[in-house]
Length: 82
Image: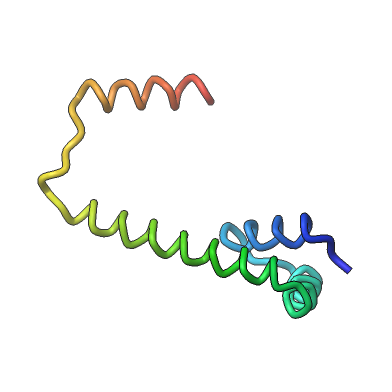
C-alpha cells in the first residue's frame, strides 16, 4: 500500500513520464481509497490544464513581447543553473 506521500509523488511524476504498470496499479488502488489524494490529483490536473490554456493564449497574443533585456536576464539565469 502506497503512502500518501508516495502517491502524490507518482501523481506528479505521471504528468512528466508514463508510469510503469506496477506504479499505475498501486496508484489506482491508493486513489480508490484515499479521497485526499484523489482531490490532489484532480487539482494538479486542473492546474496543468489551466497553465496549458494560458500558455496557448499567451503564445497566440502577438502584443506580448519580452524586451531584449529581459531575454538576456533569463538566458543568464538559465546558463548559471546548467
